[in-house]
Image (cartoon, rainbow, N blue to C red; front, side, top):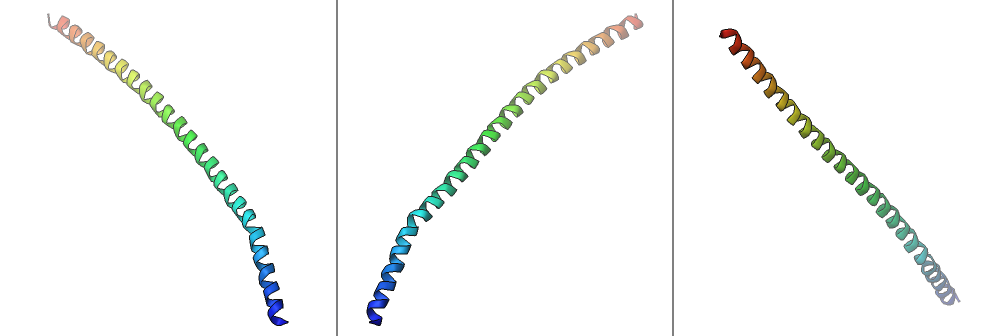
Length: 87
């Protein structure tokens, strides 16, 4: 009888494991879905930051151009004022 009992116990254990496998796979799949969603959020945030950096660089370049133009105007003004005083 102990042989029959151990066979039943093994069969019950195997059935229990087989019943839990789909639950384990579903839990793993849910974990993967969560990680994929987090990854999408991170990628979206990176893209937003990348666009902000690009816009800031364009503003910086425009301001740099304006500053150089103003410096050039000031230099010309100073040069012409200096040469007027020497004459």
